[in-house]
Image (cartoon, rainbow, N blue to C red; front, top):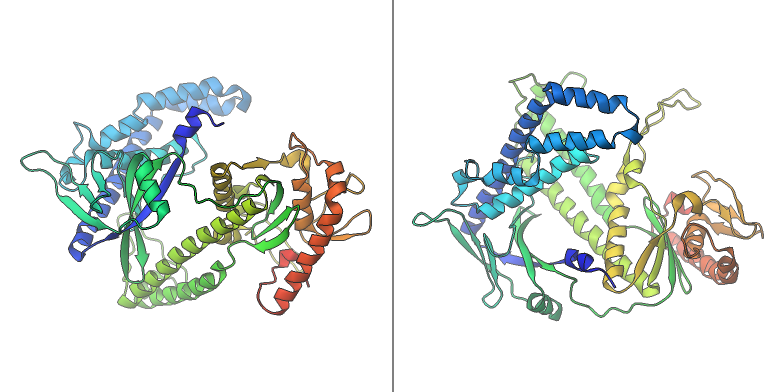
Length: 512
């Protein structure tokens, strides 16, 4: 049974389309622009505040002491730094006060459109960025680029935003007090149709609302996201019992259960849209160069602007049209990727409810190589690694969806200890561990069998011991014959589908 704290932290979201009129869309767009402006204003204020703190002697001396001491002895110094930051006004509630406090004029200037609670939620978002920057792994606090804000949320369901399910009406009110008051925007919401939606609205406690905008062809479409406390309504999916081993790569996923073995490409339907996107980006670049010839050097690189004299970019009608098409493809890719990941997670839960995975450091795989290397011909090797594949396939997102789905349906996702487990090196027939290069996609076992590397790793991950730090060789021996039959069948299916062009032949398959 989950603890009470865990139950309270569970959230689920229901998304409903908003049926907007053109004049309502103009007001919504204005409010999005205001929130963008308020966020950027707050970021400017807090960065200035941080810069002033960093100039003080006390802060400089403290940072020198932190750098001179070994990492194991920095705990007390970090506590001193945190106290110094808090005293300087770096906390969530101070940010909220800077945005919409009694002495602040930021939110009050737009109070006919923006409620205090909505301004507070925007301040919390800014604080999250600063928190990662000051206390986490964040490198820089980015400003909100104009036109990129995708959603506006309320802090609670009782102020600023209201949803009336009986009338299918959503009210987004501004701030202000009587007699002036704020502008109240009444929007029609698409009616709740399915049993799942009705059960969600009827039985769950609402935590807050969020208005989301998505680019569709030539304009934005708007949606209401209702965030509920607790778990979503049960869709009565079939969940099997048993173990499932998963080996996730940057583009592919290998799955091994007692009754099924699969080697699949993650989000394979994203590929076509990605090719179209690359073509449109080249068109966009040609249009930008044609309309802004003075902004480029003779060698084709962009000129650097000077302080106070930024480069001005002319965007033609054709340019904006292409940019809209790229935005549409990105939106499609996001939806397709999430849909395919969700379907795959459901399929895995249909194979078994005890899922074993090997965790990966995807952040590390995104980074470019640090060392400059030269090949045999004297050419520099490329430093790029797996950033493009990870952006298109989003394996970390799939793992998150799988964990959420498993928890909802009473399953469990176990992570094996990657340092001691070494699934890619083990041979269960001999018990020996041998390192293999990334290009070695097939393994020759001690008994002479030839197996695909990823599928065999998934099989070994499935047969974990109780502490998830070692491979249970006895379980492997008992279930290997069944796995080998399913393995050979899956490899034959892949070969046939590649020949018939029903599937892309990815190099990591190792299938000629």
